[in-house]
Image (cartoon, rainbow, N blue to C red; front, side, top):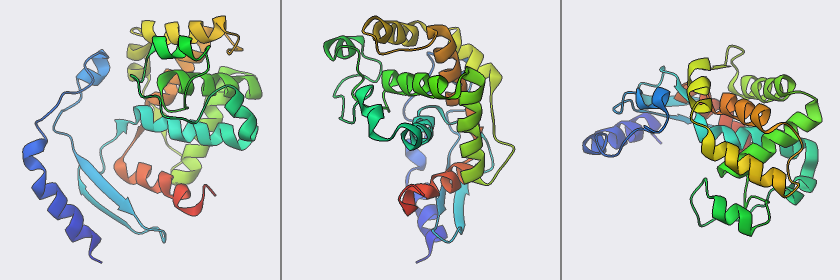
Amino acid sequence: MNYQSILEEIEAEIQDELSVGNVADYIPALAEVDPNQFAMTVTLEDGQQFSVGKHKEKFSIQSISKVLAFSVAIDIYSTSLYKRVGVEPSGSAFNSLVQLEYENGVPRNPFINAGAIVVMDALISHFGSDYAALERVMTFIREISDNQNIQFDGEVAKSEMEHASRNLALAQLMKSFGNFENDVYEVVRTYFKQCAIFMTTEELSRAMLYLAFGGK
């Protein structure tokens, strides 16, 4: 199979769609991202990679990071983590306060904001500090992406923290239900650093290869 040709065909077919939609303008640093920035990378099980577009250009991986942080947490806590965050689809907005209250402060899954925040809270509890928790997630990502230079963008994280009211409200609501163990601001600030991790599509695709091997 000619993977490179397939990617090039897809790239050509979607050119008219690249101008459709908007960047995440609710965060100033994200609003500055080029809306036409586009790249795809496929990584095979043997490590071969095929790419199109700006596949050498880094971007903040944002909610993709939730998969990686959850992988670290589930390795530590196993299914006991499900007492604090569920594994069902939400059917509501990713930052819904109403559903979280209805569910007594237990997020539906680790890939909505409340779920990802409580996962970071669990990691901080286990590792003893926000720094150690973030460093463990970063170490995991560096290992699976085969790049020890992966970092987070401090300006993006700072910009998100300056507009964190909704996420802080989610954390406070979980704390009111007893499903939060650490300082709300510390956890949310660390969560934003996680979301601000900067990677290329090549690095990210390589990093996700562990999922093709059953998470190993």
